[in-house]
Length: 209
Image 1 (cartoon, rainbow, N blue to C red):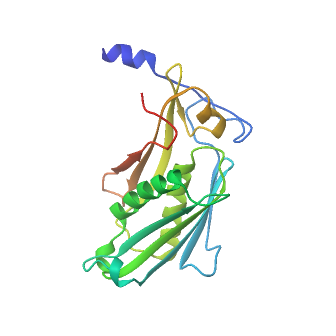
Image 2 (image 1 turned 135 degrees about the horizontal axis):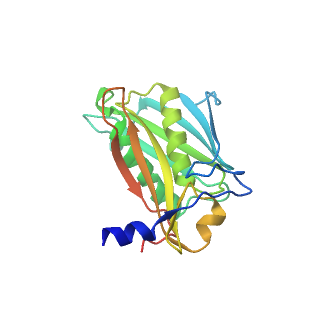
Image 3 (image 1 turned 120 degrees about the vertical axis):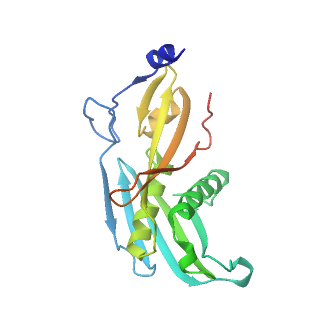
């Protein structure tokens, strides 16, 4: 059984207009990050992954409303704003996944009865949006000086209709014959400590089979 599963799953090096050509291995699209772009937040970062772009701002630790106060740690909120229109079900689902990842690494106990708010603005979505949001959130938290036990990152993996594994798929690849798609997030601890799998999520509109 294990042998048959291994032979059915292949790795496809993809190239596309959004990301340009890739090397003949399973690689990410070109990515870039710039921090300290905004003046009002305590920290900010722009993360570009291919043609997918997200701008993140972090506010806090700051005063929190009494009804949201947690006596032994900071209250962490995530707000995801789409490029156009108001947040919907997809944004709320992604907010939950991003918040769960941030809570796993932020040392909230150092700032009890405060709030830390991460605001994510989608600039463009050319695929693998949730992973890009995770990476933007991490870089903005670092820029804000929020204490964390480790850094974290996100990556999208997908299977197409013939069982080929694709890493960091574009929007076009996500829409064509997907069997399943998952976003994995991992912590990047200091040297000498093992990395840790934090969470995984299935983006809305994609079913696991």
